[in-house]
Image (cartoon, rainbow, N blue to C red):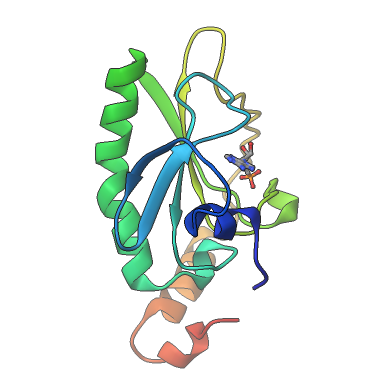
Length: 145
Ligand code: AMP
């Protein structure tokens, strides 16, 4: 994966409003927030999408998300929030370095969602094909693609 603007932020070559950093993770305020307190949480590992992320980086991000969410809620007074994570341009990803948005929801600001649910079709078949890929039987089928 090529460099993104987040690589420069990680290396300190571009400024950010940093709120948290450890060996594997950085969190900073989004430069164009959807609401006050909108935070980005990124692994330092340079990959574009979650499916390419190492287990260690994924665990490191997951470990701090609850704490960062609590801090954002406390600092802003918001009582609801969304965690958004986009993978791929078709899914509205603009910066191709994995990032999790923590977006406080206020009455007049936050993440707007259009949610158009479908009826579940062939659930049993689909669940078992995913489960099969996750089973220990054929781990190589889930090698990075
Ligand atoms: P996404 O559409 O999920 O890829 O979101 C990318 C996010 O990165 C957007 O919310 C941008 O506002 C944010 N962003 C882009 N450049 C910067 C920057 N230099 N500092 C902070 N946030 C940024």
